[in-house]
Image (cartoon, rainbow, N blue to C red):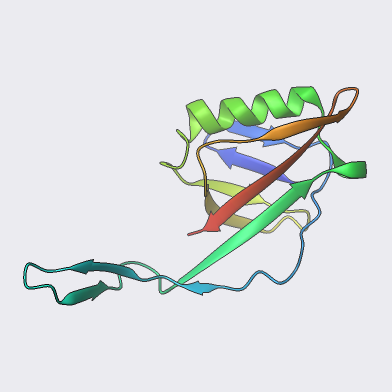
Length: 123
């Protein structure tokens, strides 16, 4: 099962997400202008940025307890997008990631069933 781990805190999902294919690594590029107006490009850290999209909807929607634990994990454990954590996917492959957005939006699709999309940036 998919889970998020940060230290002693773990969020265990009640189902595995659908993972749409087609997400390509993007080149990481930080740009700014110097005082003369010339563009300065920095390549700080890794040169590739991989984004993973986890989609919980339909038959693999999450329950209310998991949604509450996930929101608490986002707000108090990893402080939005500030801290990294370990995402262990359905094949038990650990990856160091962080949330792309500090907010989670979900919609109720049935009694105690919530659809949610999570974007993770691999570090």
